[in-house]
Length: 337
Picture 1 (cartoon, rainbow, N blue to C red):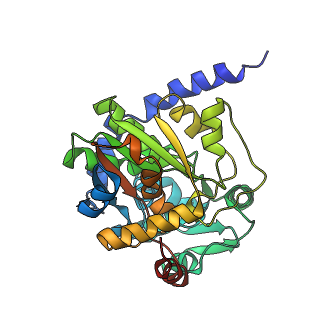
Picture 2 (cartoon, rainbow, N blue to C red; picture 1 turned 30 degrees about the horizontal axis):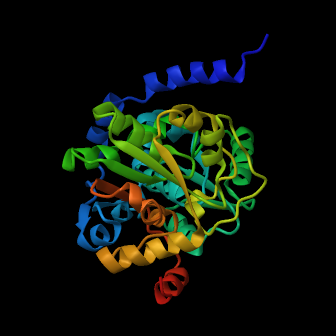
């Protein structure tokens, strides 16, 4: 007799929590310290005034690949170096995860192949090519590209790195939240964009280990709400397509590993529209002069949407990426909020 879905997720949950702990994150922080600098956590008087709370922004757009994902890529490559040097690796991504793996591959001398949906911005494709990655275009959203990458791995013998379900990425990603906690230990609320869920997983592991009262709020695009719906309904949800300009959030279905970890642990999930994210992009530029892509501004967009619940609190907005095409950023900044 097969396991029920509930029993399966309970067993998976117990297994995963043994693998992804604060101790793992501290070890990852020590390793990444050899390759990356901590990113700034900046206080914004303007955002604080508009949102009615004390607002800090974590500038993950200032990493070498202009995204938080590089943390996971370096940690993964460091831990798996002996194996991946022999096989090379392949992954699928809308861009930021791909750049993290390509950057890590260039640092450690590992051959990297990347499958990307056809509509991903040219700025991300060029960045991958500059890092020496082999770029393959396939599919219209992440999930189609991922299935194709997995089939190529089986045919060619590459090590396949799943951008969402690969748990060895999580401790590295979580180091951005460890940096927040070290600098602002009395934080009340952290808002983190959610595509596949690695950033939110890191947030839950770090903050809930330190103080369960710290609230973690995830943000998804209205046009790609699979994990939002899954967490609300208590089951895995898939969509046939996604409709969002936020490349980093364009995931059509929820995956079992993030769902299992986040279910019952993340405090809330918020949906934001593309227009709201673009208002967030303008707000970040206006108040702290930082460039964000759509997904990178999702936390800021969510803060404006739920500002009534943030009043008087110390809030951290995760600016998770700044990889946006120059024509898009020019259009967005020229419009009025």
